[in-house]
Image 1: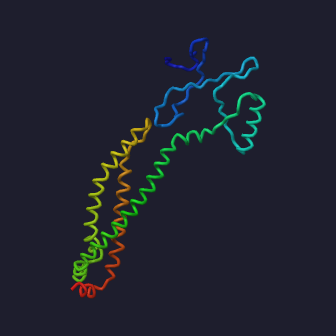
Image 2 (image 1 turned 120 degrees about the vertical axis):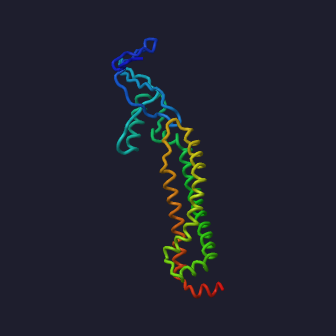
Image 3 (image 1 turned 90 degrees about the vertical axis):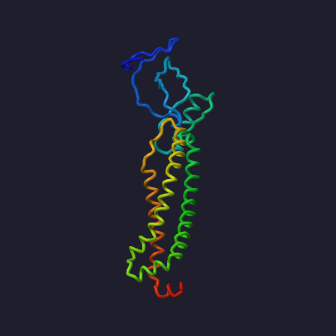
Length: 231
């Protein structure tokens, strides 16, 4: 090892000596599931008018892709007719590294949306049933002078505590599965508390929105008619 590797000579044996002319920061040239390993990028000029044998040739292009690829193919065929022209795009190669993650993300999004829809329908049905069961109590309180906000608070407190109870059970389970999934990556992001706070707030707001929509209908009802029907 060198304290200052720049301009040092690296001897790899069998006469292969290379001078270090630059150092780059670590970057992922493979999937982030694997740790970053040492990488040597060699620069060697042709000698005696002969082309240096390379495993890969990286070309950065800009412009009409079809025309550029046709030019590269023609040039390759003229210079190396005995070697088949094979190519791949780096962005496609990197994309293939994360095919499974994108598939998982798509499926997770679809099932999350379905779960939210089902939960919303269930919450709407439960709220409707609960308010209907307590409709007489709500109307009596309204006749006695309870405000709309007081009636809303009466119902929303009961639902909110159950939502918070569900959140308290759900967060540890979600944290466990998220942590277990992230262990498969050598480079991973920390799990922020915002990942749990924002969905929890969204769930509470959804609950309140459903209750508000139901309570508006109840507030417009005539207490006399409702109490007469209940009796």
